[in-house]
Length: 239
Image (cartoon, rainbow, N blue to C red; front, side, top):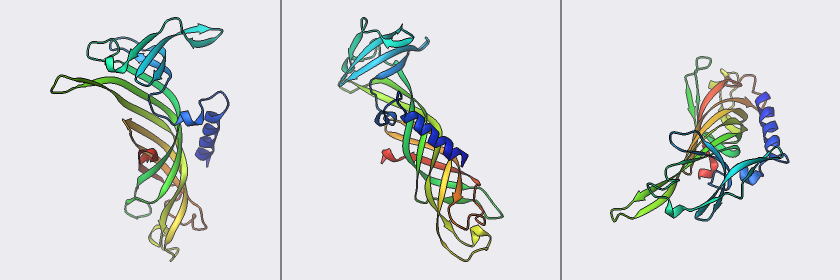
């Protein structure tokens, strides 16, 4: 249960005063905030980016009273439609690091051989709450039509690493209890572990390593209790 307790502590920390509001933590959109601007061949530069409809306002940062604040005396405003090959911000990357809380589901679980029972692949109903840290990469690209018309668009990729916990179901039968019960039913498990996600545009998918605890009196005879599994996870928001 230590992983579950650690997950709860992380969630409380992320929601505490002074942290990012909850409705912003799980947002992976291109919103206003602090970024690193990566230019090919040079080190990333810290900036504050204000996103307003189809325009971007770039503020350099300055130190004041032990704080880092946007320098409003020096700004650059750009319209996204003007981002074309050869323009200043074209093909540069805006990098954002943030805390992340998400609802996800484990689509598939692979359980290795245990007690002479062959490897199992299951797809049972479950839900998990994920908390971790995330890096998003936004790059302005453009599509050139056969009529030589340029249409700028934003390409988004992201990477996540963190902990998860949740509730799921699993089949309980004589095979997975070494014939120590004749019952066949769907048992409820508490699942927890670590997972890593990769995001491309609106799709977030990842891999998890987890452990299940059966939440009934057959937990001591269930061969998979507290045994590791590998899972395919996906963010529920993708549906």
